[in-house]
Image (tube, rainbow, N blue to C red; front, side, top):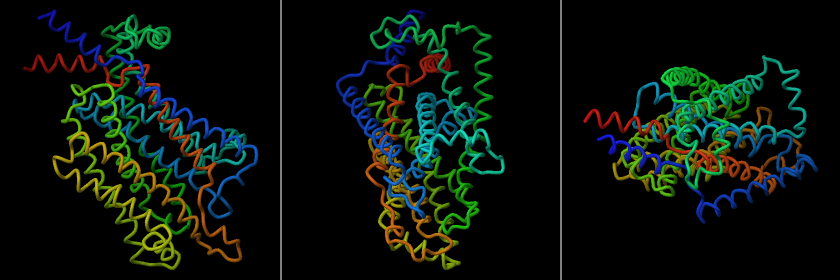
Length: 439
C-alpha cells in the first residue's frame, strides 16, 4: 500500500513538474518577445517625439492606453474570485485553477500599472504623485489600491508555492535542473514542518479575506475615475457594480482560455478534467447574465430620460459610428456565451475555450467603448475645432504599445509556467490522499 502511495505521489509530481519548451513553445515565446520589442520601439518614439505620435488630441486624451488599463485591471480580479472566494468557501475542485488565476492576476496588474505610465506624456512626473499626492484625488486612491492589490496577489501566489518549492529543490529532471539556485533562494527555509504549514495556511486565509474588499475597491475606484465627471456615458451611480461584474466575467473567461491551453499543451487531462470546464462554464454563464443585467441598467435609464448630451452618446453607440463595435461586444462578449453555455455540450473543453476567447475579446472592445465614445461627446459640445478632433483612431505606435503590453503580460505567464508548476503539486497530492481515504 505504501509503495503504491509513493508511486502515485511520484507520478503526480512528474506529471506536474515544469517542462522544457518544445518547438511550439519556442516559437510562441519568440513571437511574444518580437511583439513586445516592437512595442518598446514604439514607446521610444513616443518618448522622443511626444504624444503627437498618437491619435490622441484635446478631447480624446486617453484612448487605447486607458482602455488597456481598464482591461488589465478587470482581468486581474480573477485572482480574488478563484483563489480567495473559492478557498474561503472550501471549493476543492478549484485547486488546479488557483495558480493559473493568481499568475494571470499578478501579470495583469503589473501591466495595468505600466500602461498608466505609458499614457503620461512626461513619465518622470509620476514621482510627483508620490511626493505631492493628495488623498482627495481619486487617482491617488487608484495608486493605493492597485499597489495594495499587487502586494497581496504576490503573497497569494508565493505562499501556496512554498511546499512545491521543497519538492522542486533537488529534482534532477531536465525541466528543473537549471533553476535550482533560484528555487533555493525562494524556498530553502521551507522544511515542511507542521508549524510552518499551520502558519502558512493561516496567512493564506488572512490574505484571502483581505484581498476581497481590496479587489472590490480597485474596480470601484477605477470606475470612480470615470463616474466623478459630468460627461455623458460616465455620469452614473451604477459604474462601480458595472465594472466589478464585468471584471468577474472577463477574469473567468481568461481562466477558461488558460485551462484549455495548459491542458492541451502539457497533457493535463487527468488534472484539469471536463468536470472543471463544466463547473467553470456554469460560473461564466452566471457572470455573463449578471453583467448583461448591469449593461441593460446602464443604457436603459439614460435612454428613457434621453437628456440631450446622453442622446448623442447613445445614438453613436446604438446606430452611429461605434454601433458595429458596440453590438459586437454585446453579442460576442455576453449573449452568445450565455446561449452556448446554457447547454451541457457547450461546457465541454473546446467550446469553453472558444467562449473564453469570445468573452475576453468582447471585454476588450467593451473597455474601448467605455472610454472613447464618451470623450468624443463631452458635456460641453465641440465648436470651432479641427475635424480631426471629432474622431479618434489609434496610431500604429498606440497599437504597437497596446499589443506589446498584452504580449508582455503573456510572456510573464509563459516564463512562470516554464519555471514553476502551473498546478499545485503538494495540494494535488493531499487531495488525492483525502479522496482515497474517503473511499
